[in-house]
Image 1 (tube, rainbow, N blue to C red):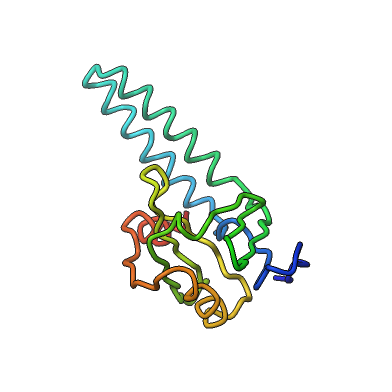
Image 2: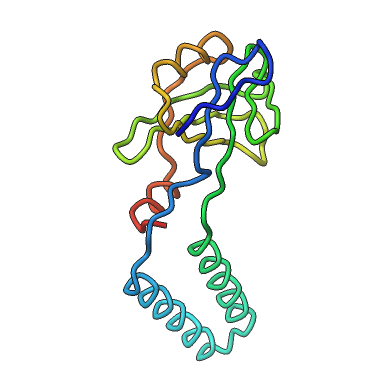
Length: 160
């Protein structure tokens, strides 16, 4: 990915990356998805649990929409005062720690937030060197090893 032009002199590093990894899903993936969804719908109808049936329909629809979604290109920047994600500014004191996951498919920065409703923020590093990001952030946020979330591991395994 290309570097974006810094907006001011305080920007240390900036880059553009897709908001998520999009895995191409085969017809078999969709067939399995709809088969499992149909099985849950049938089971809920047999149990006469109509609310659960509605929830399954809604969940299946939302999962399908997400599976078809194409990632947007997002601008990221690290400055001497904040982290900027797609124009939204996060001050360094909003975060408890950071960790850089170096994975074969993509390297990404994980920020552990102090906010309860947004506990972790993942930022894809694209072509950025992890060590360069690490050295820039260590000045402002403690580096602390984090474990990969179970949900992240499951979605990668399912290529979602």
